[in-house]
Amino acid sequence: MLTLQPVNALERVRSALGESIRVKEQLLESCASEIARAAEEVLATFRRDRKVLLFGNGGSASDAAHIAAEWVGRYAGERIALPAIALTANASELTAVANDYGYERVFARAVEAHGVAGDLAIALSTSGNSPNVLAGVEAARTRGIFTVGLTGKGGGQLAGAVDVAVRVPSDETPRIQEAHIAIGHALCEVVDDAYRDGGEGSA
Image (cartoon, rainbow, N blue to C red; front, side, top):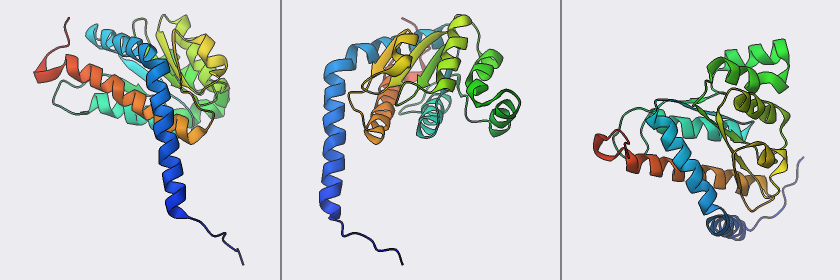
């Protein structure tokens, strides 16, 4: 029979939340300008009637879908629907490409299918070294798509491959993913501010 170890739940909760707060405070100090630059590029993309493509693996795939849903649906206030696609959302497409071309090509192939010049791609990878994410970024840049990378402290190869890199100052995957959603929400808030009261986001 499995024997569970004694756990101090309150101590663990305080530790996890405290570390999450610390990481976000450091993110604010070290990466606010990069996040703002990414937000400006996202807004410029929507203003010229282009779309945002988002992709990542595992928890990052869920984060990509979450952020895309905020733009297609509603974040905090009423505004027009905005074009954003999570490239992990179509299971048939994803598994067909993985089966026929290999998992490393799933995002590159999807970018080739859905992306056009003037779009923007947001690539999420806590390590910055996921081969399929890097291939997706390469495909995006080849097609004239502006690229944003959300990654962890070291940045990995992704940080050097994108136009704007946001390196969350942590080596812990859960803390990095929590910060990625906070970054995604910050992007959404900038967009919502521009489109407030039904505006079209014009300068």
